[in-house]
Length: 573
Image: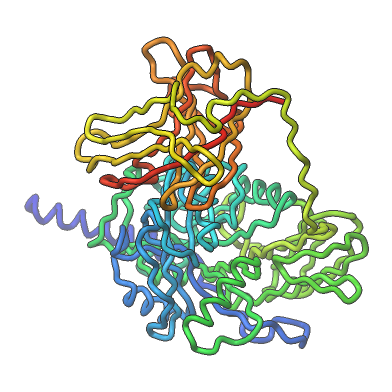
């Protein structure tokens, strides 16, 4: 036997062995529960299924919006929320139907603390970026529903790290991150299964994200936060260990395979009308209010689910809240295959279980957060992935505005109030940009004006800064207070720079400014290091400097403008 024949024979034997291994270890197909698994005849609210967090060929995805909608239509989905990478300065396309699928144009923004998704926002007047807390605030200001993406990603650049920021929602599951912690043998087995049962091959890589769910449970005890599963579908293969690289010629996993693996179900007040704008508004309302749950369709279908609370005449659905705490009646209805279990969780801990399609519970805590998971005995993962994850109902939370206490000021040192001159103030900028400072007349007296013209950014990163040196000589302070406005919406980086030494040691806090005068307080404890040389909160010495900086984080190169400041003070309790 020649070497060529021997190699061919060996290759065929290996291929046959791999094929046999793949067939013998195939994950089970999804269980079809049909239409009769619910024991109650009570009507269920209308529900639409869809995918959230999808990328097209406008960023790092493989297909057009139309092709993505057609893939969604083949899987029976009703909507797709596309969230291509960007900075928000591109106007979102209006909602539209294609192939009977509602397509919404969203956004994924890169921040210093992870990635943030948005849908329903207006066009941003400046590039969104920087710290997560500022991007989240900007998205909210623009009317968007913001979601922290892939919070548990094994890739440090993608993982969410700012858990103190108020967000609209988080991804409890992310389709492009869930497989990245699996072993190479496990991934290889999934590749063998993929040609036969693509959705089940993907779903078999999912584990219960225990830490993400724990963090979510903690967050919801302070405020309402929506949890949903993000497809993060690109229609192309990722390169393990290499960031932001996609092999577009290799459509694994395909959009269709991801869409068949899991989907969101958004509960509506009424059936969609077919008008794209009206239906998109209803969808966004359901997402914002938390009337949404996730079902892993690779395990079982159709995945019907409903969670409600009643106290007297008051009723709340998933995502809602009731002011009453004790004696609230909680009801769960769900499809449930044999061996499945409904689990009711109170503040993250299971308090009631049911192996029937309904669960009833009367609350005994005055203030708690309740949510539901539906689990199956044969679900994949260690620990096993839940089949259905719903959003919580918060009981005993009186959603009343709290009284805002007046912050006391022990001492205050004025750096600028109403002076006609700008003594002590100067400007800094890199070589190609321009900046100037002067005192200008305003309705209430004089204002400090920073006039800037940023360079085109082809050389150094452009910036312009208004600087007050040696602020530490004014004595100890814990906050900076000032009034600010600008000729256009912008973000201004308030920075403290340590004096002395050759290292660039700075801390910053970004603030929003527009044509309306705003009073702003920046607390030193809120400032974060700009450079690796800075650690913890600012250390203020006699030679420290205060800077108001316009830079390329939120201002495009070749931009000119004016920022006015007044009543600049250093204060302490």
